[in-house]
Length: 253
Image (cartoon, rainbow, N blue to C red; front, top):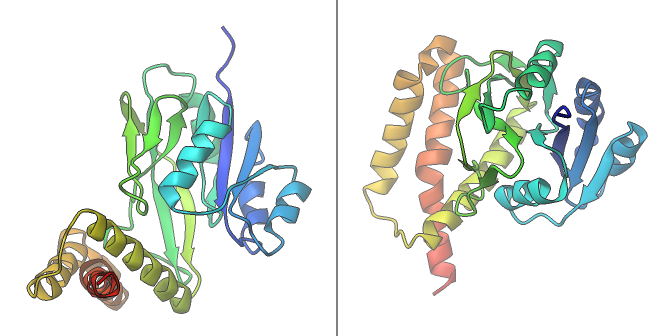
């Protein structure tokens, strides 16, 4: 019986600042595939220079992109890595070892997150498990969750020990820009589900999110930094989606 095949897949859109280091960290993978969303910078050229295969598809949402990659990239196992993530040698060895086991359809991978150059331990950022190592044909992404994707897995999932290193946000400007986009995606999902904003949503939802981030998920471990981060996450996850939802409802009449 032949050994299972593996492809590392990186979704990209204008990632020229990240793609080289990301692909270098994946040099151990038998195949490296960049699944690009019509980048206008040097992402594609750099990927090809690094020896990666390049597939392109216009971006609509994250879940659809990952499902398309699962359909188009032919390998027994797909290892999804974002352009701002790096695979360590220990993780590389672990991935190559666990795919030999037929017992699991997927593996959760922990992430060590760095925000504006600082490692974050609390507020949900560690161990921040992501279901990224998937047996092709046994996994798909829920189309109802276009952002913060959810994997529908036909089988059991295990947990890896070694993390991906995630250079999540290099500046606060980047953090706020990305969180604003996520809030819009979440508002669109709420609209599709027929949810309407109520006055209490603008008070209770952000408070619940702050309490979850700072206390339940121990954002306090990071001191003032954790307090600041928990506040902004409460705003973008608990308050801003309802502001955007109200705007969408107004726009549609």
